[in-house]
Amino acid sequence: MEWLKAPAAEQGRAILAGLISPVEQAEAYLDAIARHPYGKRIYARTTPGRARAEAIAAHDRARAGLRRGLLDGVAISWKDNIDSSGIATEAGSRLLSKRMPSQDAAILAGATLDGLVCLGKTHMTELAFSGLGVNPMTATPPNSIDPALAPGGSSSGAAVSVALGLAAAAIGTDTGGSLRVPAAWNGLVGFKPTHGAVSGAGVVPLCRRFDVAGPIARTVEDCAEIYAALRGDNATDLSSASARGLRLMVLDGIPFDGARQGPVAAFEDAVRRLAGAGARVTHAAPPCIAEAIALAPTLFAPEAYGIWRDQIEDAPELMYPPILERFRGGATTLAADYVAGWESLNRLRADWARLVAGFDAVILPTVPILPPDAARLATEPDFFTAENLLALRNTRIANLLGLPAISLPTGQPACGIMLMGR
Picture 1: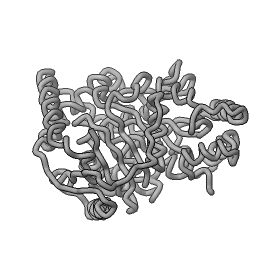
Picture 2: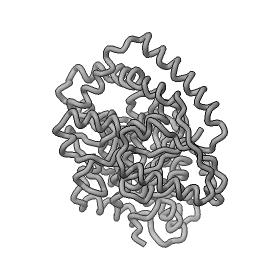
Picture 3: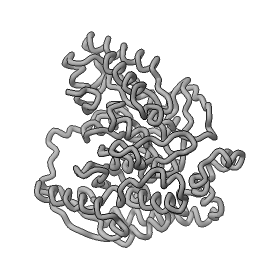
């Protein structure tokens, strides 16, 4: 087996069986990152000293029969908005150049206690405010399927690090789709937990009322194990998981408006396979979806601008103009409209919960478009804006409605199917 591209859980089992060494795996990943032609576009910085020390400790625990869990000794990457002690954490922004946290974020500290090895920090969209993954101010990672295409964001380097075998899995964050879009566009699994299910302490914020950290990995099992490590909990037992008897609702209407043929065809094929495996599939288009999406401009940008206004306006020239424009889009929203927007959204969330109470999951295409050309995005602001809105349109539904959501590969390149839970 090519261990660098093996699922994280398989690597953990191999460590337990003595087939691979955490030390050798960490060194192999660090060497692969250093040698890869796109390594510096994927990792903002590696942490070789920390990785080696953590790998040696994992190796010693394995030899002593004291492993802390399935993923003890497995090496992963961390998005560059997750604080790491003594290691720069800049959130993809020149506004935060040389920002040096004094302690790890709570999730990084907890994962380290569980034995996960930190390889370094991955590039991301500037302050996490775009779903495309293009960042001319620091670096734009290549799409793993085609380097000329956008990687998806904002957890761009996170996804690409896994897809290209430069990490066993990755931790990113999701405010409007930032785990699921890059996962879909790089053929991976991306899991957005319910908001609040994972600690946000020490994570550079975009919109605190929507931000949540989660895993990008090769398998659902990997995501379950990593999610458990982030929570300090036990992983869900997936041994009896089956599609048979699942009650699934296809969310018709808005998720397909303006959708491109490739993602729609891949989604429909995936739905046919789920039905063939015994899932019961129905269709609906509840009106509350359109109402929720209409609230997005009132809720996301005003909070983001409120958090970052002072830093942005002190040095706006340090920002990529389309991202600067997105932040400033929240400058004129009235406080009364923001509060009223949240009142409306809370009502819509309750309506949604009643409407879908009889279903196990609601399904839709993760992203209605394929990854666009990165060079064109970087040079055509109107194209950037239009593609960004489409890229995040479907994933944002789960954030607005307060739902956990997972994107699974369909088998077609850069096309995912998303399942939203309760």
